[in-house]
Image 1 (cartoon, protein in one colour):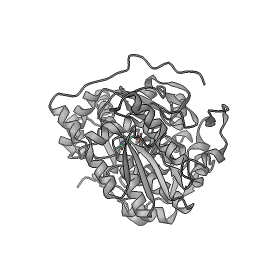
Image 2: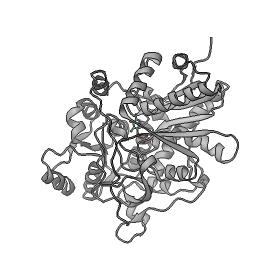
Image 3: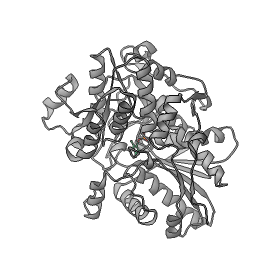
Image 4: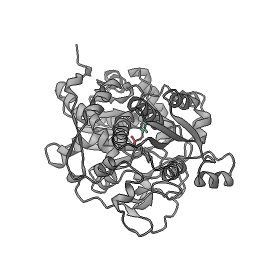
Length: 446
Ligand SMILES: *Cc1c(COP(=O)(O)O)cnc(C)c1O
């Protein structure tokens, strides 16, 4: 039998996260305090995030040991996840390339987000914090944090973009099943929320507004801290468990990746699969090409400007240097809700500037076409976000066919799409629309 799957035993799961900061080709620009335009005082960050997470955010240590309690919960929620070979997709494409994918959809909340949710809740609990507050778009992140809260017995409050709250009720229900409080955003609970509601009582909301509401909420409660599902260094670091596992699994299969692909919203699942391999590539051990795939509707990597910008619409976050479309950019309502963000992780921005990672963008129609082919060959219905990686891989495999090259391609299938069937229904009914910004909102210089 050909080997089409590699699994690891719980005991063989890697027990450390990889921090890319000391290996970056240049030092990362520090976050700025918008009041002074000077590097922000970590004490100010500690009012927003748990201390342990702020420490990880600026750590120069290459490896961080995963706490025992977190390792145990990783196993409970489905880690290590399997790595598969997509033999049926290879056959359909008639490509000489061998395609492998790490499948994060097998975790019990259905995506990679649980990897950082458990870590973040753990550090908050350790410090005596009583509640974590967050935002969610389509609901993947909110669901993961709600489960992590349930497993560590910590309260969770979620501001969910109103459009998703109304159109995609099932993830909201799941969060409530796990015991979280969920509010549609903009809400009348915060100043920011009331401001946007006064503009439009049926405001559809968005990630940028929901982040502002969550932070404002935290600032009124000494025992609460904010939790973010992507973009920041510590979040990306927690996701490297994906790539560390994948390295061991590729070894079991006797394969070495030539190409690594992931989709990008804020950059956390891409970093998860890619950064442990980039570590080796930077040290010159192996030549690997890295592709980061985003939607043309939110093209922060391919069309954004590299500059300091806010992480939220209400301008409550520190300024971070990243590829951004501007915090006032209104991301069109594509089905890949998890990719509807105006910026991208600072570390990923640096890797793009140094030509270590190549970004690519696709339209929604081609994304769903690729997702359909994947579902009909491999059986897994990808999340619309993950389908961006699938599309990138299909193009690369077809290019390998053109050139007659036996490339080994590895990608991260960040989640399943079984709660995103509305998008598939719209695709089947021919109702999918493509969006592209005519212009990028002009950024003020900060
Ligand atoms: C949230 C999400 C993403 C995008 O976020 P990243 O931080 O870029 O990984 C991608 N895929 C799935 C399934 C998601 O839930």
